[in-house]
Image (tube, rainbow, N blue to C red):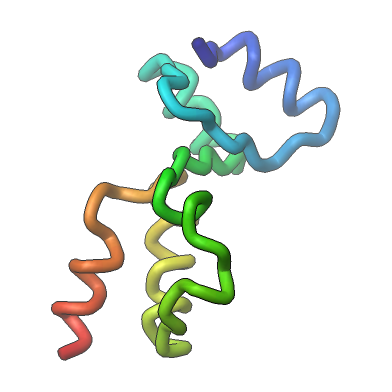
Length: 90
């Protein structure tokens, strides 16, 4: 479980990004605290890890830019983000 105390410890070591594993739990306070302090919480993505990058479909530069901006603004990747971006760009 990731808590506010954990975020404080990470900030002291200069950590600006936390890659979450499958089943990791982040308290609501820790999520808000991390976002307020610019710590990016990167959710576990089994699809991205199970498919080598060379086998993943190439994204259009605009889609990639939008995806990065959304994740940066929210501090996490919302479920179905790629599908939503794809539909929006059609």
